[in-house]
Length: 428
Image 1 (cartoon, rainbow, N blue to C red):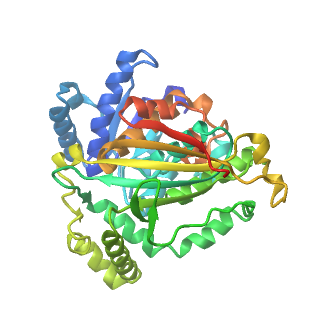
Image 2: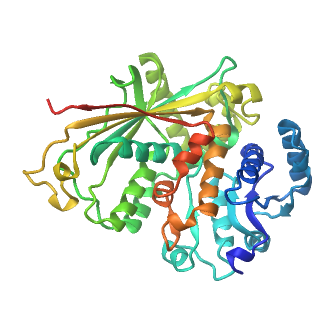
Image 3: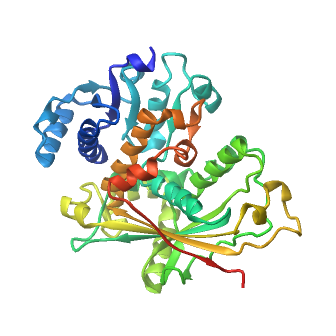
């Protein structure tokens, strides 16, 4: 079935889940904007999941929240991750499939398989390319803001960048902040299976990136950031690995391009907070490594996270009053001529980085406001700007998939603020 003949432009799978309901809410706003802007016409969209009753409840709840009565008539598709036939039937009806079913470690692959069943059971990047299919992961707060922040910093710099450090800050409102259990479960199993990553990465990337002459040394476990006047710890999420995968993809396209070095950090406010976070992280890591203690973590999320994670998730007030900020500090060269190319390797003639570029990205609550915004604006890029994406498709990161699209502009129109703070000379 050709893409043009499919029944829907977009389907949200897992719409009745905690994150899925916020995604439906954001999709309602996106559809309204697209219909009124005249850019690409009205969007035909549907929601999907395994329970028709829960999906109807979701539409009713979102209709009440947004005051859009027409949402009650949004089409429903019944699909279950344990039923391959139902997933295939869902996938062949839509041009873009947005999956909110998690944890993705357990439920991601069946959805990906379903997207390919019309031509064959595709599984790997080369086959996806051959069939013109885009599989873009990490399209929520992990890792679209990071990837687009890196891209914005590169665009704001006077020349190529050697490295970027990112400093993330979570800003709770007067009602505090909380996170739903699904994220906790993903973290537990991600940490439990961390040992698998090394062998997977060796198979995916047998060739190492060129070793830079001017290396960015990672900060210690606890460090003081002069750029943000804050204590920091290494950010435990997947952003760094996603950015590095993007750099590998860009190097495949542009072999002479000098790879970017990247390290993200989390601002924690005080030295005491940093010590507590590292201690809790150590306990979490040990417990996540063993089956019995892993079950304890899953059974008592509120206890082991000091109240941050729960099955109830954040309240509407908490979601509405929480926000985030990211500061990106890029160090590089004043011109491409100064930077040389990746072929220069460790040449003694290579000039030292001489410029610093600082940018900032500010946005709403990360998990349930920013994530649906990022997810659906990424989907709109696939739907509206596929001609600006890699021609052959494939398994892509947000940075490699959307580099030439207007994703940053789309995010700006939804309330995310990208600002160039300064560019200065650090050669002295």
